[in-house]
Length: 170
Image 1: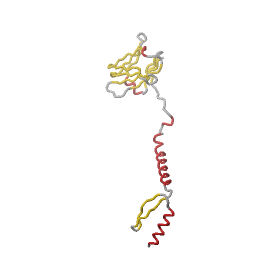
Image 2: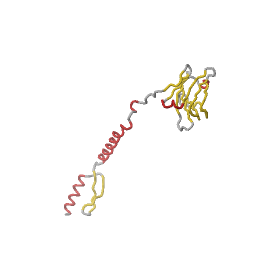
Image 3: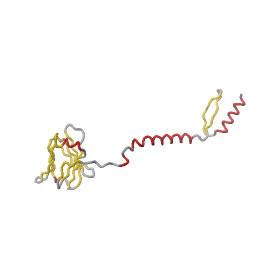
Image 4: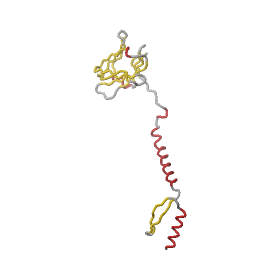
């Protein structure tokens, strides 16, 4: 029996060289060395990562490959000075009338509920003005704007989100 064990141990030692892990055969401690099995572990990890990427890629690339789509704007008011447009058809429910008074040179908004706050951003996204209102009618002077594109964000009473609109000034 000892001869068989010695022969087994010698053959194992000749086959396997690099890593040592204890194993027990017939209650005798034997050192088994694994040679060059690191590449197999790395291969399995890389294969697993590749499979995860292939599985999750369609989820994240759903519609993003085409880039951002252009939002179809709803123009509520337009004249030679201003063009006021909504980013969503559903925002029409917030506004009653929008008018421009050429004598006083101001843009007037009448809404269905009180406007709590108006924020005016320039084309770069910098906050130009923040106007607390507290009324359902607001007048904004043309003199506040130079020519360019602006984003007006309205916060209505009872709403938690701002309603973003666009104002183009000629």
